[in-house]
Image 1 (cartoon, rainbow, N blue to C red):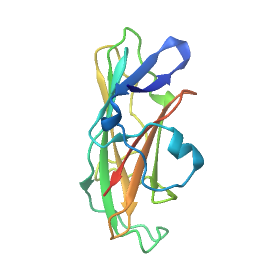
Image 2 (image 1 turned 45 degrees about the vertical axis):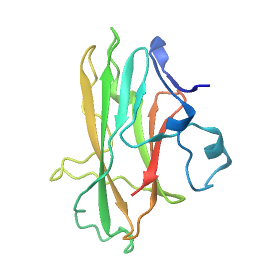
Image 3 (image 1 turned 90 degrees about the horizontal axis):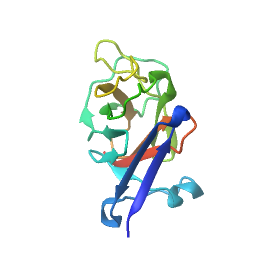
Image 4 (image 1 turned 180 degrees about the vertical axis):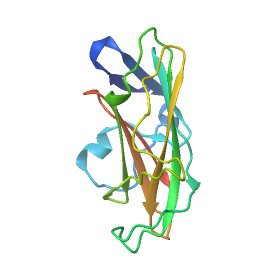
Length: 165
């Protein structure tokens, strides 16, 4: 039995991914009742579809820039590289993508920092046969935490990557 993740976008663009149940992961927390009903990928796994592939890389440690408004318990930074490869014949609009993170059961504010090239959106549309990338920088506490990265394209069903970091 296969579990499929489908991302449908306006203008007929479809990105979908399928994996066997042993490759699909569930969040370890019960932050929402919908969490138990969605398929979640592990960091580093591809969400492959007819028109593209999305990957959220395993986290890498990254220094956080100074921010007096950030909660004092968020002392570590984790960088998640996101790659979107367009295998279709139509451009994927950068402004249709959104990226969010959750640490434990709490929404995390993505850090935008030019010095570390971290952002919260793709910089340009992704032309056919090309790739677009963004590095998401997430502040986390000192202890390992459950982190979820959500990738949304337009009004389509979002994709989730989850793991302890």
